[in-house]
Amino acid sequence: MSDTRRLEVLRAIVEDYVHTQEPVGSRVLTERHQLGVSPATVRNDMAALEEAGYIAQPHTSAGRIPTDKGYRLFVDRLSEARPLTQPQKRAIEKFLSEAVDLDDVIGRAGRLIAQLTGQVAVVQYPSLRRSGLRHLELVPTGENRLLVVVITDNGRVEQRFLDVPDDVDEATLGELRARLNAAAAGRRLTQMDVAFNEVSAAVAPEHRPLVTAIGEVVTSALDEEQEERLVVAGQANLARAGMGFDQGLSPLLEALEEQVVLLGLLTEMTSDENVAVSIGHENKLAGLSRASVVSTGYGSDGDTVALLSSIGPTRMDYPGTIAAVRAVARYLSRVLPT
Image 1 (cartoon, helix red, strand yellow):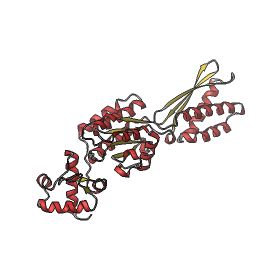
Image 2 (cartoon, helix red, strand yellow):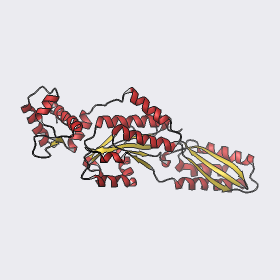
Image 3 (cartoon, one colour):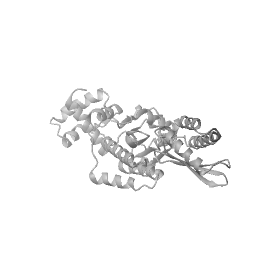
Image 4 (tube, rainbow, N blue to C red):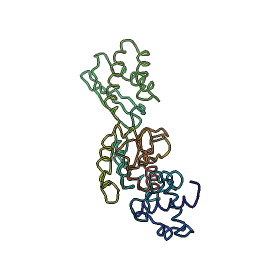
């Protein structure tokens, strides 16, 4: 599609249909947009767009609506970035920065996306498989018991108790704590066994069983949290009039409940740095065949640790949704615990 004017006609059809929720006719296009041609010429352009599969006629009226193919061309070549206003940016930053812990951060991010887009938000918790160890603490609690505290670089905290021998004193614990933290620095949680093996080989033989036991406790605690977690917010938005799911909301709700499958789709479509858009039948999950997904990654220090997405009708405000997802991901990265 190289004809510039026909691309402008497609842009006008998409923008009007998103705004009015009604099929768009040639006369309306010439009245609302400065196309510089007659309604008859616009009708010819619309006929060419329809023949190419970019627009379709939903019923016998003269109006046309975009197809998935038309939305794809709009997103790839015609949509323009719509930066958020300064008040919107300040409100996002303030809202996220007031979070008290990781759960609060993730929950707030989901509510923000849902409110900004009027659609469904899906926010992934930072993945342990892509996380690192920030600090390992060993706290004696008396009665030959030790509290093992694992703090990840994205704010997760796991605590487990461990029985220890009578002859383990504060000095020994201090040495083990220092060695374990030094060995774990910069390593992913999935590499912790290497760190513990290094420490075990460096300490006195009588302390190696304790290092092994601490390693088993840490591994066990993290294994319990390995399942990826998603927060889904704004499902009620899907039932609003005009969302386009009146006759088929159940498949979409079921798709949102299949979190493992949904996460697989989001992971496959999303790059680390850019906002990705998957439209209608491009989605491999059947329940999303009438929806579009806008997704990006977030994380601290430029390292993507999780995904943030907005899901809505194919007739969504793509520039607005992309801007909202990008902005919230950026601010979420800034306030993510480090």
